[in-house]
Image (cartoon, rainbow, N blue to C red; front, side, top):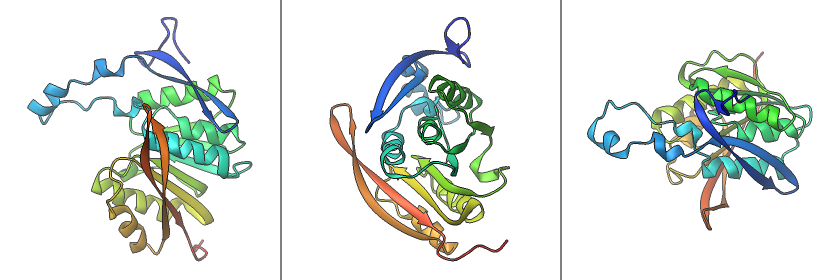
Length: 225
C-alpha cells in the first residue's frame, strides 16, 4: 500500500473511481504522470530512460476491464494479466472471483497492482518478469493483455507465451488501441496453431470514443501434457 507520505514505489498517487457496468473500481495511479515524461529528451537522446508508460491508464486496458467485468465468467478461473501496469484488468478479474496472477517488467507497476487489489478488497500474485524471457509456470484459463503488442518483438513473445500457458479450452483476449491495423500478433498466433478472431470496441477516452481492437485467442485442440 501507500507509505506514510502517500506514495507507492516513490510515486505520488491519486485515486480514480471507475465503473464498468455495475462493477465499481477504485484505482490508485501516478499523480501528474506528465512530470515523468520528457518528450524533448526522448527525441534528442535515443538512449534516454523510458518514461513510466506502465503508469498510464491505456484505453485498451479500460476496454478489456469492461469486457472482463460485464461479459466474462471469472469465478474459480485461473487468470493472468500480462503487462499489468497498475493492475486494472487483474483487479477486475479478482473482484469477480478469479485467482489472478499479474506480471510486468517494472517493479513499481507491481507495487501499484498489489495496492490496487488491496484497495478493492481482493488479492493477486505479482511476478516481475519479461514476457520475452518469462519464468512463469503453469497454464491459465484466461490470459489477458492490454496494449502490449505495440512492438513486433512483443507480438511474437505474446504468441509464444500463449502457446505455452493458455490452457486447453481456455481463452486469451488482447486489447489494442495503438496498432489497431497491425496483423503481426495474429500471424504469430497462427504460427503456433492458435485460432484467433477479432472484433472492435469503442471505449470512451477524454470525451470521445476510441477504437479498440479485441483479439480473442483459443486452442482448438487439446494440448499435450
